[in-house]
Amino acid sequence: MAEIEYAGVKVGGSKALLIIPLLGTILGALWGGFEVYQRYLDMEAKIAAFESPDLSTIEKDLAVINEHMDTVNVHMEFVSKEIDLFTQEVESVKNNVDEQIRYVKEVKVEVREDMRHLESIVNDVESDLQEQQKDIKDMIDIAEKRFDDRRDSLYSDTDRKIKELEERLGSKLQRALDNPLAN
Image (cartoon, rainbow, N blue to C red):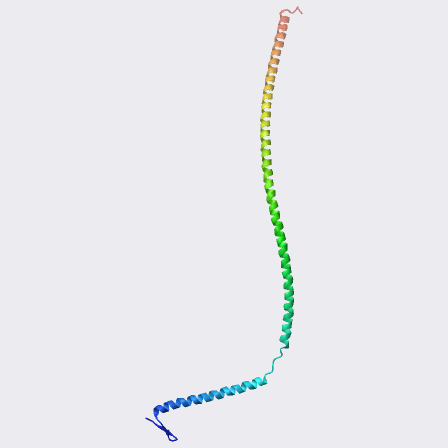
């Protein structure tokens, strides 16, 4: 095996394999520590050189936003009052409509009752008219029969009188013809 001797210390192969990574780790830790320290120094320099930004424009914008929010709140209060008034108006209209609906229902019932009453009256009048129409028709039929009978009676009476007249005239004419000198 290989041995390394340094300042009177002999290190064998397996010990050298342990020392080399140990030395690399120590050197890496030192280098990392120096890097962290250097970055710390750079950060301190940047912090020392830091100037706070001008926030006046942001503060002005916040003031404008606050004023706008105040205006919005005032408008929202106004809108809230308007909504309350509108709600009251809608409630009033709803109550009025409900009242009108009740009234219309009552009127509907009354109209139905009146229609039934009128319907019964119309039915009674129709019945009376039909009876009167039948009575008038019967009266006309009776009058027509009486007229026909009377007319037939007049015709027969007239026919009889004409026959009697014809017979009398015939007999007178016959007498005059039979005895032309008698008249």
